[in-house]
Length: 370
Ligand SMILES: *Cc1c(COP(=O)(O)O)cnc(C)c1O
Image: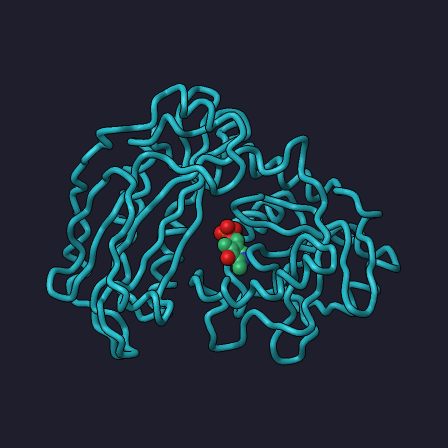
């Protein structure tokens, strides 16, 4: 790539300066906001910020009052979309403690995303420390019950320059948003639209990393799904236009009558941490998991013959969403009669129980913040 970021490794022991908000949300107001927070609209009082410049390396680590960024109109990210992000959650345990789920995996993926986008790779310990610092200072914002605190680490290129090149300066930040149970009364099956006009990713492209541009490019296809009365879009591969890849922001699994599970192989899809966790949990309970290509025509045929029992989408935000209906220009079909099935619901419970500390953490996936 030829991009060098020399001052990276000296940053392993960054000390975060703490500047708590002088005017935090009053307790009563916070409690009112936590009653029904929805997703991604309510934010905590603080943010964590770390800066990078070629001259100083990673520096200026702070946990401070959540505030606007002042950006020059020529800031690189506003023009060339050099931006990456992550998504993970903090869960309140019954004993009042707080769990993070596999933050090391998010830190590693963030670093991979940075490398693909020619950005300064943030040392993984700094990523984890920033997330933990924010969870500690905004602990009172973590909803109880089936709610959680959604954490959004992200990084933007902030060099002021209109030339097309990797920025020499970056801002890494973490913000937090309390979220309610994604689905009240259990997950409702989603309907998905097969995008035949638009693709998400091609070999050699950016499909495997969490960069903002991927989502900008998916919105037109998502809008098309909504126009057709569907909840979500599912993308096909960009070469043959027949292999199932994933949804706009979730990976996908198929469950068969022989007890096996199938999920599309890594490559152009986003390597989901939920996907990886589901594969591990299924395998340890004796399920055969195949990471194989699967075409839309086979999906339709298997749904008709009864060979396919269930399909579901997975990701941090919703954990597991059963897919009830598949729609496309060439017709619709139902999965499991349009209802949630036992495979999806069983895996969902297993995963959620580990996240909330109700089941043994045999994989060492949990990091206790408190
Ligand atoms: C984030 C994301 C996922 C799910 O990843 P998790 O680590 O499980 O949250 C899947 N697909 C896309 C496109 C994503 O952006």
